[in-house]
Image (cartoon, rainbow over all chains, first blue to last red; front, side):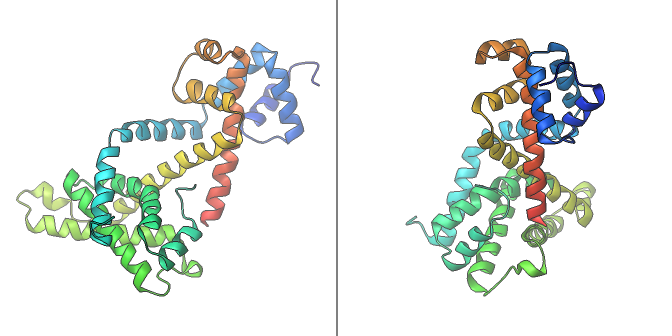
Length: 87
Length: 193
């Protein structure tokens, strides 16, 4: 167990998935009871490029839900061409 | 199930070619291909026609040829991209013949642009798939906290209250889930080749 806060460098490495699993677990356990470290981790990962990509992908997927009817119709149209109307 | 190439699925389409295998194939690739066609600047009707033509071409290739896609010769993604690009170019040629404005004619062809659009849609589908796989590997409450806080931008306090966890746990969920998601993505990219 960590008795004191991990260094900023350690938190940065954790956020960048660049620390071994035991150290990662210790940081997580520590941050559960340390508001400052938890907030720092959130801030560090907030600038993560991958997270930005995930956000954009989810946003697009959300708006695509409205297009499910279109996809469903298109799927049936293609199936009908491939396999006939019995499907 | 993965949206990105599964050799088992491709093989089942080749051997079976029936509606069930195709339904799965469409579920995986249809939305991505429709996104690609739309990005190419077509009307909704033309975009759907392009998707249909791509999938009919894929079906023909997989059911009539012994081995349309040879893993040793390249990635399925590259093969599909080639088919999709070809169909987009076909549609553009057809539309260009009917084009009355310079803008419409200018839609004729920038191959690099098409490849970029395909990559964009492929990557987006891959990211969604990674999130789905990640959500299955992570404690549901942790993943939910991540989605509400990190993806949908809810406040840590609101998420903590809603899920009955500490605010710190909400903060931590972001790095924990991202860490797993990054590993899932790295593996998927490695599998893709």
